[in-house]
Amino acid sequence: MREYLLVFVAAIGVTYLLGVAARELALRFNAVARVRDRDVHAIPIPYFGGIAMLGGLWAAYLVARHLPFLSLAPDEQVFDPALAVLVGGTCMCVVGVIDDLFELDPLSKFAGQVLSAVIVVAMGVQFLWIPLPRGGMQGIDPIQVIIFTVFWIVLTANAVNFIDGLDGLAVGVIAIGAGAFFIYAFILAVENNQPRAIAAALLSASLAGACVGMLPHNFFPARMFIGDSGSMLLGMVLACSAVTLVGQFPQTNVSQGIGDAQAGFQAALLPLLLPFAMLLVPLLDLVMAVVRRTRAGRSPFSPDKMHLHHRLLEIGHSQRRAVLVMYMVAALVAFGTVILSLFAGWQSVLGIAVLAVVTLGVAFLLPRWRQEPAP
Image (cartoon, rainbow, N blue to C red; front, side, top):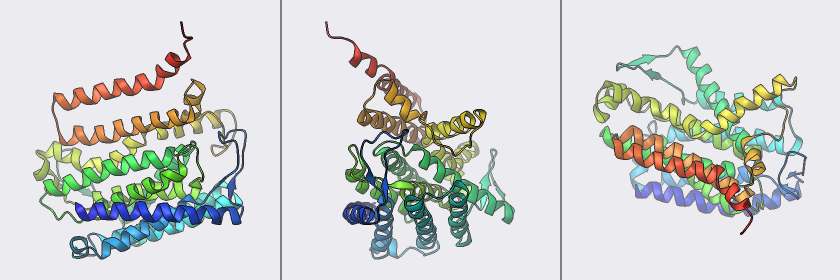
C-alpha cells in the first residue's frame, strides 16, 4: 500500500509541475479555448492539461519500476499491461492535442480514438473472459475480444469527454472514481490471497494522482483546461484499468475469495460495472444528448448547451457548487457500489441511502433556499 501511495504522490507532483510548462506551451501555440455560446468561461483559457497528466502517468510508471515491492512483480502481471495503456494513452493524447490545435472533424477524431484503442489491445490488454451468473467463466472469440475491448475504451473516453464542461469537473470525477476503483482492486487481491502488485491498482493510483495534480490548475476559476487530450486520456486509462482487472483473477478465485458463486459473479462483474456506475450520470447525459440532437435533425456530435452541468447552472448553482454537486454524485455512486459489493448488510444500505438523500437535497433544494428573500 505504501508503494502505491508513493506512485500516487509522484503522479501528483509531476502533473502539477508540468501543468505550468504545458500552460505556457499552449499559449505559445495559441491552443486556447475560445469563448463560444455554449461555454461558461468568459475569457480564453489555454489547453494542454492532458500533456501534463500524461507526464504524471509516465512518471508514476517509472517510479513504480524502481520500488522494491512493485519492481519484483512479474512484468506480465503489472508493468506490461501498464506500459500498453500508457503507449495507447500517449497516442490518444496526441489525437487530442491535434484536436485542441486544429479542431478535427468528428470522424477523424473517432478514427484516432479507435487507433489508440487498437494499440492497447494489440499489446495484450483485452477482455479474456466474462463471468457467468452461476459461476465459471465464458471465453470470447478473438475477433469479439478486439471489437468489445475497443468499443469499451472508445465509449468510456467519449463519456469522460462529454462531462468536461465545467472547470475541474472531469478531473475531479475521475479522481474520485479512480480512488474507489483502487480500493476495490486492492481488496479483491487481498480477498483472493493474490499478490497486491496488480496493473489495475497501479493504473488507478497513477490516474487518481494525475487528476489531483491537475486540480489546482483546472478547478474554478481554471487557469488551464485539460482539453480533449486530457479527457480522452482519462477515459482510456479508466477503461483499461477495468479491462486489466477483469482478466486478473480466474472466476473460481473470485468466488472463493468473496463467497458463493453468485457473490463471485457480482465481484467479477464489478470491474466492468464500476466505471459505468461512476459515469452513469454522464453516460445518461450522453445518450440524451444523442437522442435530443438526432430528433432535431442535427448530428449527434453537434454541440449544445443542454447538458446536465448546464442545467445545474440554470437552476441556480454557481459553477463551483455545480461541480461539487457532481463530485458528490460521483463519490456516492462509485464508493457506494464498492461498499455494497464488498460489505453486505443493512448498515451499508442505510448509510448510502442517507448520503443519497443529502446529495439530492444539495442538488435541488440548496439553490431554492439560497434564492428565498430574507425576511
